[in-house]
Amino acid sequence: MLHAIRLRGSADAAAVADRFDLDGQQTDAYLRDVEALGWVNRHEVPGSFGVRGGWTLTDAGRVAGEQALSAELDATGQRERVQAQHRRFEQSIPRLMRACTNWQIRPTAWDRSAVNDHTDWAWDERVLDDLAAIAVSLREIVAGLSAGLSRFAGYDVRFAVALAKVDAGDGRWVDRPGVDSCHAVWFELQEDLLATLALDRGT
Image 1: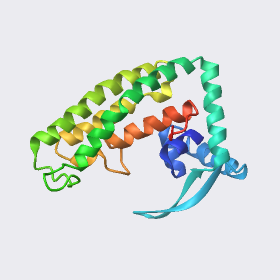
Image 2: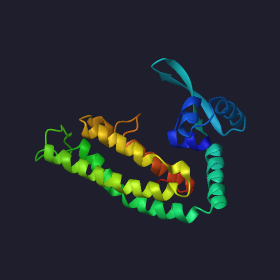
Image 3: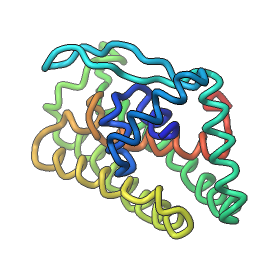
């Protein structure tokens, strides 16, 4: 449950339970218990149907989550597998960053930071080619991870679903925030790997 909050950044109890298919009532009760321990904070989140309570990790909760993940790696003997797949994942970072940047920006002769208006089909097609290549790599990485820890399963499917929506004409699914866009799924897997291996994003 702590890990679900870590991956979501902020989430209500229903979203926390949904992330790993947990029981909703048990999740709500657990979150209130660990709130008393100082591991999570509750805040109000405005939404379409009024204000809901959301949960975020405290520094202590972040440490507790990383300790649990480290214990999981030791208990399952999967540390080397996850480290190896993380190294593979790191190789995709420049390509993903380039693809998202090129989706947002298309330099012109008079403006190197011109917003991509998506009128250059060839430019956008190169971005989609990059994303398709990342999807293939992601499928292999997730297969390697989930063979040892099933909780890693699904990232590749979510990425592929987002890419299919882009191919169908909705370009927002490349980098749209708040939904399972290509960038959001990739970023969440990166956070999952960093948390699992207790690595700092800055390094």
